[in-house]
Image 1 (spheres, rainbow, N blue to C red):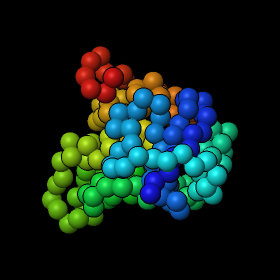
Image 2 (cartoon, helix red, strand yellow):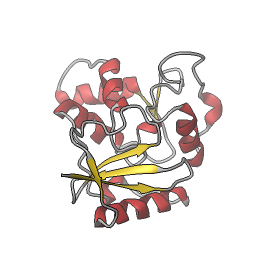
Image 3 (cartoon, helix red, strand yellow):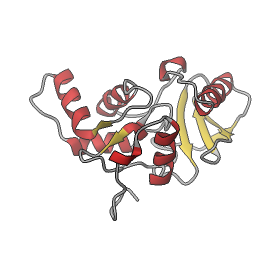
Length: 179
């Protein structure tokens, strides 16, 4: 059984998902891949301690604090490859960005492989079911392009700006799937 609750934020209403003990999802309104790999209906259940903890984490984050993903019981649903990528995302420091290529190189090194596809890593990043907390918004294209955010480019820009990232070196793609 999976549960949901809502949480207001500066980005609009967020939907939280849980298995009763762990946070399995955090989706922005209208987000691509909303619900992720959850294969059954989410039952509304507002009073779960994990939802209270997630709301507290988000309140601190949006107040300018730097809470760590490890403070919450996270359990995103996905295969081993995606899990590896999501763990790498949790290591990107607040207020910093990295590229899909850098993540691919780090993952290849972890796995003892000579290389890894940036596109494969990008697919896993894009399917991150716990937005904001697992900070996929901190990943940009190699030239600073703000590509691939399932919550939309406007939300990605707001999150990066909130964290104090220097936006002048980043660019919004003129067309493509990131918009």
